[in-house]
Image (cartoon, rainbow, N blue to C red; front, side, top):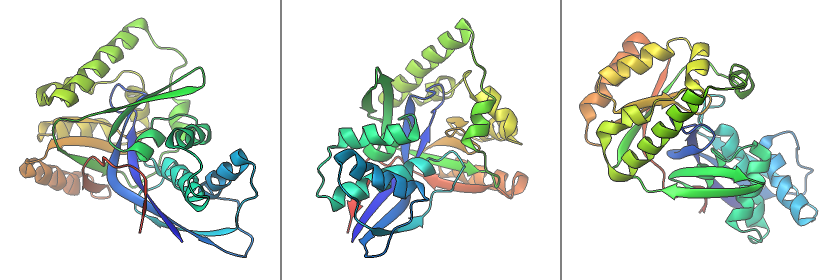
Length: 284
């Protein structure tokens, strides 16, 4: 029996559209057991599992896969990336780990279509990832301060397809310059611990203004949570979850945000998490 633990991920971090993502200490656990029965082929975990055998040109072992899930689906927290990474690592472990982490990341990106969720899910921490001529480049960015990462999760899902459909086909030169500058500022602030720069660095003009229109209460929550003391807020992935960054020691702000959400958006779920540095791994 093989157990694989995979963290949630929050991609498109602020201005880092399709580039910046971080792992959260919220997990799905995938249990793989060899079986004599024919296995199903209709889940993303199975698809990823089979991808390893296909790549190695080996007949797959029939397995039973059980999922112990904490990551909500279609909420912008990397549930599909977790399934992909879990399936790939499960197969790789059963085969004695013939594939290095770099190849697992490549296969995961092929399945997901982009690396900004699968990279932090696999590697942990805050990760910048880009694809250049088919090659994936990743860089883990050390975060100086420890933060409380609050997830404000609406009761309604938002499909990736719908979230993509509202994005413009082209952006202005000014919007591009805006996001490049903010992304550099955000990265520098996280590296150096300059918390006062986080809110400005988190501003985005590439996807939030468009996807936010699909989420009832989005702007109200972002504005209110900022006034209540959050250092910065952003859309998590394609949404609808909102990620709020709060100082580790600032329990008063966390409680104020919880009380506000309970009063104003009672159907939303509020989670308090931290950066997950280890990434996906086998567990006993």
